[in-house]
Length: 109
Image (tube, rainbow, N blue to C red):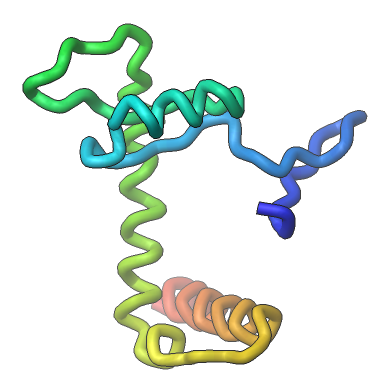
């Protein structure tokens, strides 16, 4: 988490997200308590055997699908999925190249 920096106007950069969208499997009391302690809003649907929690943000949860599809695409991209770089900056460079390739292919259609 130390490498993550989310810029903010007139304030130091944040290192933690405001919300965390997760699957039903991550809705345990311990995880929700950890998120509350760190002032992170949980966007996790309740299981069918649990009571509904008020304030569930359905739109934010649906936005999670975009991130999942991007990660799925990166896993399908063999060059990125099978890279085991020693340095994080080299792996990040491969990710950036794969995303640029994806954008160029999308714009050339």
